[in-house]
Amino acid sequence: MKASSAKFAIGQVVRHRVFDFRGLIFDVDPEFDNTEEWWLSIPEEVRPRKEQPFYHLFAENAETEYIAYVSEQNLLPDESGEPLRNPMIGEMFTRQKNGTYRAHPILAN
Image (tube, rainbow, N blue to C red):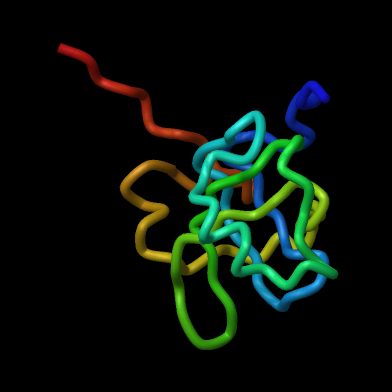
């Protein structure tokens, strides 16, 4: 089965469909690209299929900030307009006046 194109974009704010966290997408894998151990650690009844995009997020919940790896089927657009507080965001993104996030230009040698 071929992976579909990504529904969400780098710099987009999303929230988890089930768990209470949200985050900013900073990378996308066209299909699962983590360890088998990680995948098997997810309970089988909620384990996502591997043949879909997976997103790397600068994530946060009410208690903490962290990096998350989430399947497309478990994400929804976050339309709250609330700024994110994850300190890692500032290293790669700038928040625009309209509330969206823009990636910093990549500098190459």
